[in-house]
Image 1 (cartoon, rainbow, N blue to C red):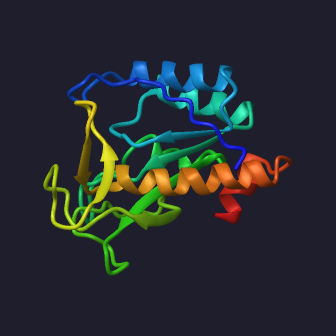
Image 2: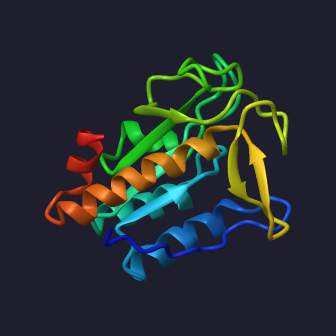
Amino acid sequence: PGAQILPVKVLCADGGGFTSDVADGIMWAVDAGADVINLSLGGGATSGEEAAIAYARDNGVVVVAAGGNDGNGGPATYPAAYSDQYTNVIAVAATDNANNHPSYGTTGNYLDVAAPGGVDASGCNATVEILSTWNNGDYCAIAGTSMSTPHVSAAAALLRAANGACTAAQVKTRI
């Protein structure tokens, strides 16, 4: 209730792209009035993307980011790993259908919360997965932290809608 979706395309049809486009998309969404930004994507740290996260923070926007699919001991995934520096970033790990840590899920101290992500990340129509929109205009059943992140983004949006005075940091704490 009270939440609206503002889709912002920052990646190519094949799922690839540039962090500069992600940074531009974050800033565009902030300027367009977003209260919560879902980032079901990740990679290495970049100064442009970090500046966009800081811009979102300075404008009171909650950023929810996928924690990564590189397994135990995998590298930190950004922008999720900015959660250690910015109180508006919520880094999301995945759980499987038994509420356990899936083998693909990256681990790390930067992760804040876990949400359903499916059993394996073997691609479309994985074993036990989450139904999502797909880049061909259809739907696909898939697993990964990109599937976990929207669950947390929705919770953040509900908190913002119900408690408009909540700051981004308060939303993160409550989640």
